[in-house]
Image 1 (tube, rainbow, N blue to C red):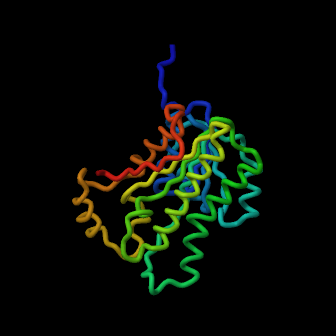
Image 2: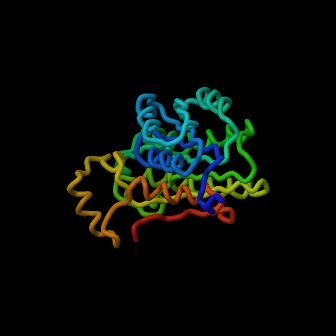
Image 3: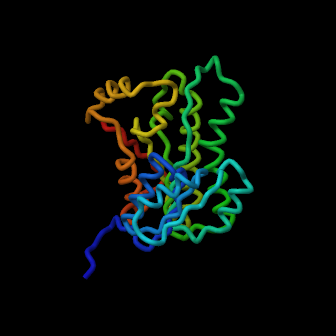
Length: 245
């Protein structure tokens, strides 16, 4: 008899964006270890192949596309199988003081962190590529309500995606499709070095956390597994803060 595991992703088809590095890569690897067939998206084919080599199973597949290009998004979605799970993880960081913001700073941040996942999700729904009782996860950030100097556009983009996700959860509830957000605090990825912050400064800052460390991609991946699995079948419209205390 097969051992009961409510967190199993066996038999599920899951799309993970931003899977070429960092949190997205960690989530893709973890999902494959839990039995899912994972489609990994990113712009860099070489880095996606590196992710693929770290994954388990034979049914994982890279799908190269720039999510800020609507034509590429439409073509990518048309080639997707029916999905049981989606993790919107692609994103960028930026640090510019409010008084120094240029239009291009605003456009770049919102285009990648907000418009791209929203329009991708819209296209997936238009092409009817989501199964009933599927799960959609957005990787947001505690930055949405934890302001820091120079981080205004990143904070705004994450706040926007959380609000969007809550509306989406209501609209998809009749089909039992769940929509949740994960809002991590600082996680050890290349993204946290944006803005000239040194590793020494970061190591000193993580000591202030009650658990005395920043998160890792694996920490975010483990929560993602719960949200993607049937174990979270009564959870939607939530924004889970994962902060080390």
